[in-house]
Length: 126
Image (cartoon, rainbow, N blue to C red; front, side):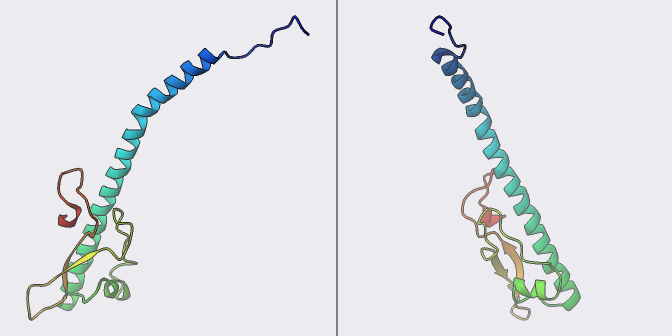
């Protein structure tokens, strides 16, 4: 056994493989996080559309705006108040009240998330 050499990888070979893996990760990881952010923004757009559509349907059916978002769930215009994917909470929605003093209630809804979207517009302005 003293004359036999065991076969294996040298330290140099392992370092080269690790350098290649690190280079690939520096390319892939930022793209992955960017795609996650784009996905969250797409979900936010869809949630805002659903909420606004439910408010419009409620107004069309009753002739008045809902007092709360929970009322839309109670009256079955929504299954549940969606979670804001950027703020990560269903309680972060900002209700925009009607400007009509004869018809109070929630006329619109916006995200309560801080920050700016990929399009350069703050999430609160979407």
